[in-house]
Amino acid sequence: MTRPGSVRRMDFISERRLARLHSPLRNFELVEQVIEHRRDPLTGRRSIVLRGRRDYVKKYVQSDEPLLAETAERTRQGCPFCPEKAQTSTPKFPSTLVPEGTIRVGEARTFPSLFAHAEFNAVTVVANSHYLRPADLTSKILSDALEASIRYLRIVNEKNPEAKYGAILMNCLSPAGSTVVHPHMQALVSDQAFNMLAEVDSKAREYWKRTGSSYWKDLLTNERARSERYLGSLGTSEWITAFCPIGPEEVWGIVPSATDLTRLSADAVATLADGFSRVLKYYDDASIRSFNVVVFSSPFGEDSQHGAVVLRAASRYGFQNHNVNDIWGLRFFLDESEVFESPEAVATDLSKYFT
Image (cartoon, rainbow, N blue to C red; front, side, top):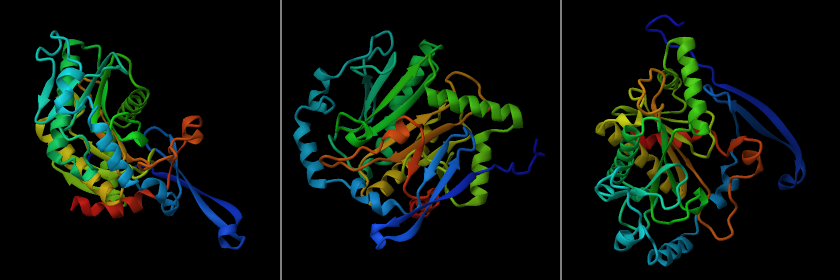
């Protein structure tokens, strides 16, 4: 073990390889492309970083704004999440779980998912507006939506202690897997651990047993010292770009002092929402309209010394007609992730949003 007060050095493993080809883009000259293989310090999973490829995929990241505006307007009338239809088109919780039938915080409304993905699955409509750009999702809107979702997770766990594995997800627009334009979140809880939650919790627990230290606190200490990907702190949360990302422009917000999402304080929720809104402002300025987010922690209701509350956000391709989905065989079947710009370059661009 590292002596008290010293910094535990963490290995950020990166190996570079070269792909060589005679490129028609350069009159068939022999060119070399750098392929960087990174390994996640916690799980050991690998990701591929293709530096400088952002310009090549830019046309897929940018959205067709007129098409998006037309789609938002066309889908508004039949939207089940808009306030004028919500009373008759959205389900209500059983009175034994939520006596009021719906959880409300500000404009946020949480109710059961009509088609559940887990035995406990709620939808949180984040605002009354049918369509909001990422920059329009303010820290207040996000804070209320997170708080409403967390209240649901807490209620479920209190009434069903075995249902201790859960997370909050947000899928914005169809490129990110959403079937509804209206911005919303999903809160899922089960007595079965989702694969990612099980792996991360198991590896963090192993790290604690091996070192006597929290992986998340050590990660942040190392990232602060290296400063390549560290964005800054906002109250109880600290923000970095992911060293070994599974998605483009992937950003992590970590609350190292909290280990159970259902016990997260109002102040901690607010700081997560603040950082989340800054990331979305960065996405918006980069013409990114679609994204995925997950918020998770160690199992609910347990006193964990190895966990943390973590928010992970990543951008997705733009809203376009006949677009290409960015999940293909490499990720689907080989479970390999790849991104088109280095996390360090993303951190450089994003850091001004945290000053």
